[in-house]
Length: 373
Image 1 (tube, one colour):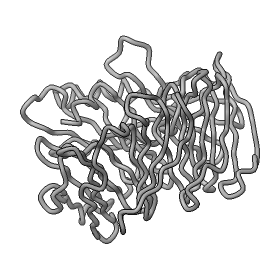
Image 2 (cartoon, rainbow, N blue to C red):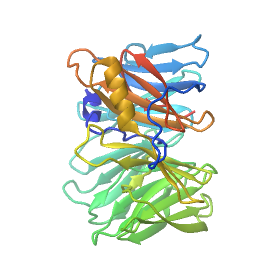
Image 3 (tube, rainbow, N blue to C red):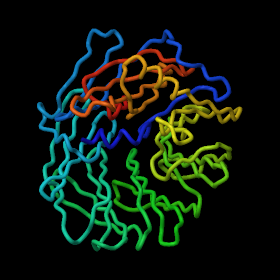
Image 4 (cartoon, rainbow, N blue to C red):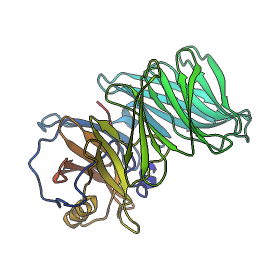
C-alpha cells in the first residue's frame, strides 16, 4: 500500500498553511465556507476519486480501479491542466492511464516503454501530448538523459543532459517547459530548461552550492527559490517564454526547502511552505506562510489540531496530502488512521487561514492527492 509509505512523510505534498508563531490560535472551530474540491485516495485494493460539493448535495465517489482498471500500485501521479496521469509498472514495462477530471474522458497507453540494459529510468512526466522519461545511460552509470515519446505513433527521441551527475530530482512541467533539477559531478546544483516542442535544452541555470527549488508563479512564469545557507534565500522570477530574469529579491527564513519542485505556492506577496517541526514529534512538518513585504512568518499549530482530532476520533492520525485553496482561504489536509492495519479509513481537515479547524470530513479511504482545479 502506497499510503502506508506516506504515513512517515507527514505533510509532504502540494500547497501549504498558516498561523502566527508568536500567537497560536489553537483549535477553535471557525465558521468558514468549505469550497468544492476533488481528490484522489486509496483503500486496501482500489484507487478512488472523491468529489466534494460545498452544498453537500452532489458529493460523489468514483472507484477508478473498478471503472477504469487503474493499477492500485501505480508509481507516480502527474497533473497537467485538468488531466491526471497515473504511471504504473508491470512485467518489465511502463504504462500510463490519463483521465480528464472535468469530463471523465480516459486515455490509456499500455506498455509505452519496456526496460532494457541500455538505461535505467529515474522519473516519468508528461505534457499535454508527449511523455518524458529521465534516465541514466548506459545502465549503471550516472550519465543523465531524457527520452521524449509520442504515444500517438510510438516515435521517440533521446537527448543527453550531462555526464556523470551526482543526483537527479523530480521534474516540473508547465506550458512547453520541463524544468529538470540535478547536481553535476562537482556537486553544483543546476536546472536544465527543456523545450518540449523543439526537444532541446534552451537554458541551464547553475547555482553552485545554492539549493534551487522550482515553481510556477500565479502569472505562469518560472520561479526559483535558492537556499544559500544560514536561512538566507534568493527568489528569482524568469519569463517562461523568453527566460529573461524579471526580478530578484533576497529574504531570510528559518527553514529548509529541498531541491526540485516546490511543495508549496506563492500567491501575491505570500510564500506558502512546509515548516519542519523539531523532532521527536508525532508530526514531522507543518504548514506555514511567509509575507515578503513585512517579513512576517506564520505557522499553523498543526500539532495542536492533530491532538484535538485524535481525542475526537480515539485513533492516531498521519497526515498525507495538503492543498491551499486561495479563493476560499482555507487549507485541505488529508489524513489516515495510522492505528488500523486491516481497515483503511481517513479524512480531510479543513483549516482556515487564521489557523482554526473549520471541519473534519470523514472518508472510507486515505486521501493522497488534491486535484488542482
